[in-house]
Image (cartoon, rainbow, N blue to C red; front, side, top):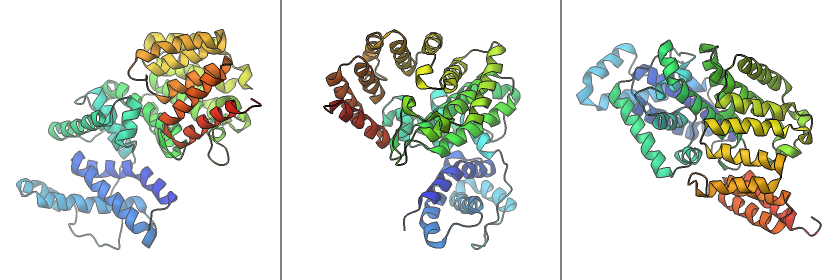
Length: 415
């Protein structure tokens, strides 16, 4: 019997919490991840048949702990570790009882900081955290980084091996370590949120579980570092962007563009909190990539209608972002903002610069941006060509349907 949507959502939500708890007990990341995966598979097989247990997290932790105990037993060369575990917990657990072991409520946060340890390179730390904490597949992570799947698989494998060899402690880092790992942690949370806000593949446009978890973890980091402008900026960016969630899809899950959204559906309290956060951060002179993106999001959110958007101010902010980041997505968005202020031909000239950037040259978003700007310029045949090219390149079904629909609309005689 296949696992239902509710159980699948629950398993995705619980996976990093369970992994954090098992890691904290056994101090073996690789083996713990394998054990948790086995527990998740067992749940996917048993819960549809027997029903979801009253304490699903405790159930998963118990099963994963048993797998870990079996793992320790099987390694005779590490007999001393088996003795330590035997002294700490019973080796035989009554199957009918799933009492939850002592759990630190910050297990997921601890796991996040462990994955972003200074012993790992920034690239491997981010990839590992997206896998362990965000629950993304290797392919989804590879797409977020604009690299081949095989390259990303190697990064994740190296990260696990580094953790295994370094003996990284599973404990909340010191204040100095928090500052050292901050950049990697924030970038990871940013990518997790982006995947949740617009899923790179599959039938759903959004993965609310990932977006919510990214916001929760970012808020937890902000509570640890309340005076840090980058953390506040990222939290503001997430709140201001996620506030539009309810308006981004129609009754059948179809994508609704920003220009066509019903703004009365936007989350006003989230917008108010985000605006207050970014206003306070900018007033203290803290200007970074997250703060600038949050400021742009605030301009969109505060416009009563799409046509009221202050595009000149957005263009100026993207200009500042360009001076701080070589991310091709910033260049793409700067081109779109330029088109809104100076005309589509200016935007198309700027997009041409990305043709030589291997990270984005064949990305569907570049084709989609070109399609929109050609449509603005009145060049319907070229717009149709790029809408169809973008649709063919995206793995997101809602995005594919939207892009195909745009091509069809332009093809209609009445258009």
